[in-house]
Image (cartoon, rainbow, N blue to C red; front, side):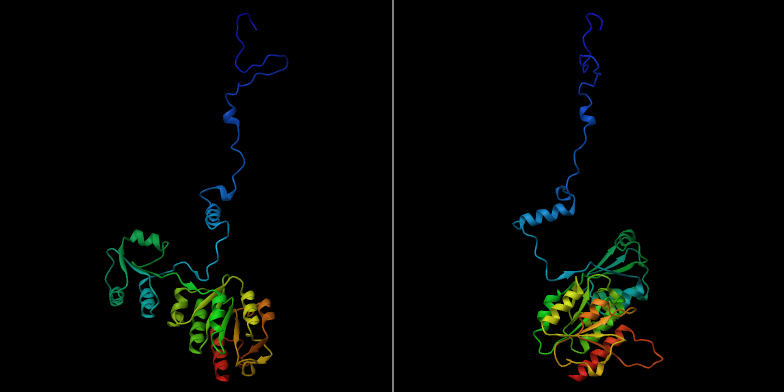
Length: 312
């Protein structure tokens, strides 16, 4: 170093030591540390769940007995008219500004007025946004969230009857079949219907319409685990009868038909699942002509419920 020159900042004296930045870039080079846990991030749902547990004294929130499904929309003039004529429950009706007043729209407005139904006028852009870009033809209905009963509550309600009938649906995927079964269940005095939470039709507008109003008179329970719900009914003394095309017992000779019974109906294509089949006390079938391969799930359930009612 030339005489009189001061050492450069950050340069360490001594042989073999390289010059550094003197700490000037330390902040820019340092990392942000480990990624915070999900529950420590205020915007994450895990953080809200943690706060909820802490506010409840460290305990997890108690699961509600009733579960509500998300709202559904009915769009299009024909669909809206049919839904209103079927008396499907409606939360709010929407009409786009400047909508053409044809006969169908006049019918919609008249029904809404007669029932004192909330009717809001919005812009077409707003109606597009709310309905997810569906072809709404300037009209749409928002249905209220359907409130499902918990299977334990349905079991308790069933036990209040002397010889209750409960219908359990093992992955019925067509909402129209669900609605038809609910209609038959109400017609033949069933206490309620149980459906699984996943891989199953829910209480959509199509199910409501097909039930012809019966969905308002008979509860539908939704089970997180259908087989566990079936076990609960079995422990309570219910006979579990699985409706199966390959069943060895004729529906006319169903054992235990006069007592508490759960009629288990399989899906439209594959029938009962293995676990549901194993849970049943008996597998029953409906005699049909050889030329017919099988019956629609909704039709088969209606016949079985009639036969159970007749035997009683």
